[in-house]
Structure formats: structure tokens, C-alpha cells
Image (cartoon, rainbow, N blue to C red; front, top):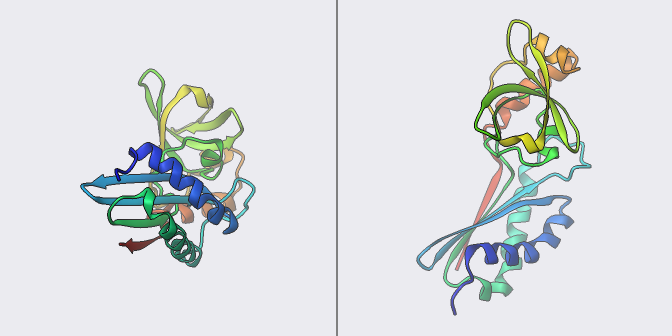
Length: 200
């Protein structure tokens, strides 16, 4: 039996794994399948729901979900021909900002933004709504700009090891404690919690 193409397989695996992920209080950010011959690498990326006030996912939760997902996939071995590895992980700092909640969770972080049309800019993320986000353009006197998500082709958070400049944080409506928290989370987000399972 031939496995379906990766896109179809990803959809099928999402349907199998989503109840488990929801039961763990998380949501699926992405399911990725890579194939090399008869071997498959299945990557399940999970994230906190929009309503969560937590700032990250505990590694123990990832590990438990990884074991549960591997057990859940065993009865569905007909979906994947050959052997496979399963990786359960949370999004890393290199994840593109594609949804409003991605912008909201990266308040005060510096992002490299490519606009539709090809122009690029580096700006600090401010308040994000359903349709648009405020950003501060760095400089001696930072400028506030509002971007509609439809204007953004691609955006990624940049790693920093210091707090957001006070002028930029103030322009975006943050107090000093928010700025300090942002700096701490920037450095901690460099690594991504993940767990792996080898199957068949």
C-alpha cells in the first residue's frame, strides 16, 4: 500500500492527533511529514490556545503528549507505510508570525518584516489585534507604525539578549517590567521543548 502524498497524510494525522492535543489543553500549530524512501519523519507542533495566559509549554507536558501520540498512531499504522519517527515540539523563535496570536505573544520583541512588494523593515512588536499590529521603528526617536496583516508577506522574531530600548517600549505602551520580561523570554525561546518517539 502506498502512503498518501504528504499534504493528505498531514491532514489525516491532524484528525487522529487533534483530540489528544486538545485533551492536553493545547492546540495543533502544524503537522509536518517528511519522507525519505520508506522512512517518514512526523513533526507535531503544538501551542497554547489563544485564551491561555501561560508563556510557555512545560517539557513534561510535551513528553507526555509525545508518548500518548505515539500510542494513538499505532492502531493507524495503515496511514504511514514503513517506519517513522514522531517529534512533538512547541514553536521556536524561528516560527514565522502568521496568525494574530503569534504577534500578540511576541509583544515587545524585535521582528524582521517583509512587506508585500518586497520592502523589509526591522520593528518592535506592539499591540496586536485581529486585523493589524502596531510596531515601533527603531531610531533615536522611534516611530509608531500600524501594519495590516494583509501588508505582511513574512515576519520572524529576531533573537536579542537585552531588554527593549526604553523609548520603544514606552512608545508601545509598555512599562519597565514588561520590557524586562520580554528580554528574558527572548533568550529562553532560543531552544524549543521537544520529545521524540521512534516507531516501527
